[in-house]
Length: 600
Ligand code: PEP
Ligand code: MG
Image (cartoon, rainbow, N blue to C red):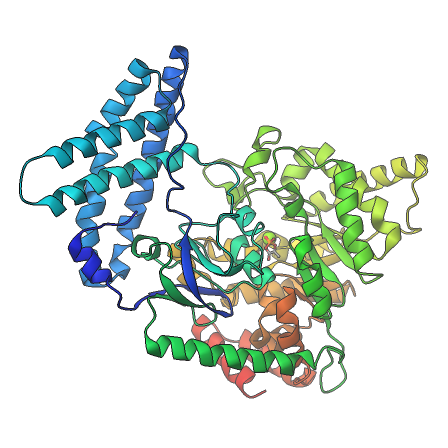
């Protein structure tokens, strides 16, 4: 949605416009943008049966309400734009909100649905064209003013049509090779469809640093900046741009200085890659000989080559959600066996930690909503998600356990339970696990002599503070710092508006991590970190100092983390962690972390 007002054009001009955002995936891209929020053209004309008119009007009302919400949100974010752009856009957005209310466009579209037996989108398109024709036929000198008004009506109609025809899965195939994809919001399921070789970069209006979309983009190694307010308003398809996923900005119509800096950045990156590649055969070992296990997180099978390339010692977190995304039905046991077998065989004996479905909250998989209760209450993140959902629908868990057990003899496998909050959940899951194993044995399925270990994610404050009790039920812990930070600080990890408050270095988060780690170490139980903190080299001294020796991260982070491990002495790390844990101010902690890392 863009204004064609001459003033707006002038404001946009060809001058560079920079949009700061959250730096979520490093890398630099210099390429034209492709705005996915632009309507893909006209929706096909569709007639309806007279009895369908009421349902069609309801669809239209819903799309109008949703569109109003979208435009309202754009309006609240204008304050981050330069004053001139604000002056230009605010009245335009107000006009859009009016048009999405009880306007002639909507009144007449509703009438056309009933009188002409048209689908809501066809009715909206026809009415927008009729209004635009009347505007253009108006007598007067201000031709460009008339053109602008006609354009605005068509733009708002396009937004309505886009929301009326939204499909559960987005086609990303239309994005041209080598473009920077920009859009208002990319869901984790959308991100899973991106091909790293095709997309030069991603910039969105929505999103947070450790949301699943950000995680997916990092995993795929696609440079990305999220939370760039005002971007889709200002950009048009084909605008040249520079995106810097490390510095956290996208610049439209980049000037000579920005282009030169991007070129220098790219060559520095290439040099660093050559240096890091040399570390691949070397062990992740501190200067005093302590081994640290560096594992990879896997979100989609396309990452396997990256995981091998990075020399991961195993998979510390296989997020099985990928199997359930972008489809209309549930994957059956055979489909799951085949997916897990590929990963386990490909890891050739190195440990694969398979987490059972963590569905719910932000990872809402629309297509599954048919058969399974989704956490749709007022607070989905606090609802029926993770292990809670699986215990409510044990047949889902049984099927997944069976699939995992059927590949367990092919390599070292561990099973991980998401969103545990009470020890009882682990005990109940174990009962089901053992029952499924017995059933498989009876069927003659070959199972390993000892059943795979069953671990618990520590990703809620409740689990962290009850870690000593959960440790009596679980065989290992994986600390999920992404959700742990979200739940501890009451800050949505995927929400751009509160991204500045999301801080895993908050002492409350660190204290919970310390408590859980110590509970595991006391019992000599394996404990790892598999949240995004594990992939940040600057945080490695602190994590090792807290006693952690296994870190699981996106594959591309492994070389830099290994470089850091090899520069550290464990006693120094322990002293450093003690100092950090005495602090109460997150900013002070961040400063200490920077200072310590800079000295390595
Ligand atoms: C976490 O919460 O830290 C975690 C690793 O799980 P996910 O990111 O998949 O929620
Ligand atoms: Mg989690």
